[in-house]
Length: 160
Image (cartoon, rainbow, N blue to C red; front, side):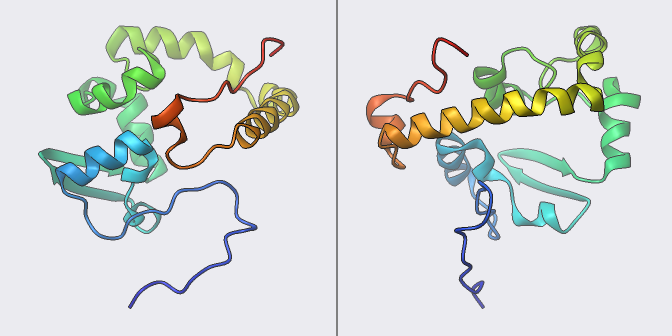
């Protein structure tokens, strides 16, 4: 039975998570459109899910398991090549895809910035920047195919 229609006008920005497994071509198309579109609905209901899209993959949602994988036993869980290929254009060689000593150095270097106090102090500036970027995108007449036709709109002005 299909999901009942929802009034999404009051929801924050989100993606509609898919409930049917995507094949390889559907995954590639969805990832090209919006990387978040490849996340299955199961991630909101289960602590770990696994699948295969060309190669086996796993998504871990349990906080203790995440801590074990990304902090305590980092070297035992290398990032997949596909993860690196998908994320590198967006985030470079950042914490999301770095490994080993390079990851440890980045984490030690950035950890002090992510204290609760600092996040609370930064949130007004980040909110203003997000609102300004949203206004710019809306003012540019963004539609689903906008970026493919004309390239991404300038999200930040020179004064940010």
